[in-house]
Amino acid sequence: MYAFDYQRPGTTGEALAAFSGDANFLAGGQSLVQAMKLRMANVPLLIDLGGIPELRAISVTADAVAIGAMTRHAEVAHSAEVQAAIPALAGLAGGIADPMVRNMGTLGGSLANADPAACYPAAALGLGATIRTDRRSIPADDFFVGLYQTLLEPGELIVSVSFPRVERAGYVKFKHPASRFAVVGAFVSKGRGGIRVAINGAKACVFRATEIERALAKDFTPQAAASVELGSEDMFSDMFAGAEYRAALVSVMASRAVEQALPQDRP
Ligand SMILES: Cc1cc2nc3c(=O)[nH]c(=O)nc-3n(C[C@H](O)[C@H](O)[C@H](O)COP(=O)(O)OP(=O)(O)OC[C@H]3O[C@@H](n4cnc5c(N)ncnc54)[C@H](O)[C@@H]3O)c2cc1C
Image 1: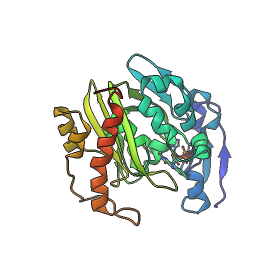
Image 2 (image 1 turned 180 degrees about the vertical axis):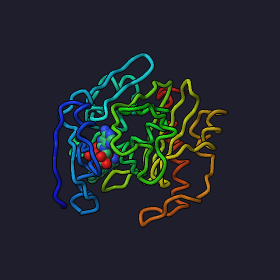
Image 3 (image 1 turned 45 degrees about the vertical axis):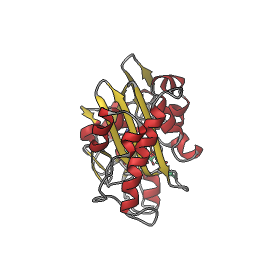
Image 4 (image 1 turned 135 degrees about the vertical axis):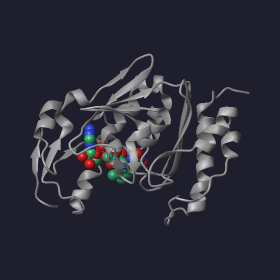
């Protein structure tokens, strides 16, 4: 690990004022500290967000669930309010990694990191969330721009994320057996903004499967999602799953997410 300075501000304003040059914000350290340990990241100044209570809150209104950037995955998973308002979001948080990662990892860190296999980016895109930073509000549709790349500028701090409440939502992933990252995952929602299907794990960046959205707009059933065949161009291929297998998994995961989203007592 390269040597670094460390600051632990008590407010968002202090964190922003402390930022300079190649400094970096530290959330739960679940990705950043590992990168530093491996000397893949050389961060001269770490600004620890862990002492800022205003970044760690959940508030639910009739229209949306707003979650502070420093809210841990375990807090979202165990929140009775989130479970009641958007059960698929609480379920997604509870399915991330293991208890240690869930107790340290944060919503803001997950979105800023933009790991293609991470779960929260799928929820943000699949629900049409808005990412609020210290200087602007960014629709999830614009936020993710490439492999580990977002629209965030250096020193821009995610403050909170607003997830619209929807009529139905489901998230299912084919998980890597060791890390539980998504080999392929699908977040499906049906709400005032229409049908949204966000896919993670399959390509360099989370994306909307518009072909499946169109099929579900006509017929919101697992069969409609499963009937769509996606091409394997641009799909990841690695030792866990080839591109064609991943393309097939997209339809299967979307179909299972629809199944989860539908009322369980339907005929
Ligand atoms: C073993 C393991 C298994 C995992 N499995 C899964 C999984 O199944 N599903 C899943 O979704 N994720 C998984 N993760 C990822 C994990 O859940 C974390 O969300 C992710 O590692 C980010 O960690 P963090 O929140 O601690 O952020 P950090 O590592 O502290 O930060 C990550 C990056 O985000 C930046 N950042 C942090 N907070 C902010 C902010 N508020 N504003 C701007 N930039 C910010 C940091 O500067 C840094 O660049 C796994 C991680 C590990 C280690």
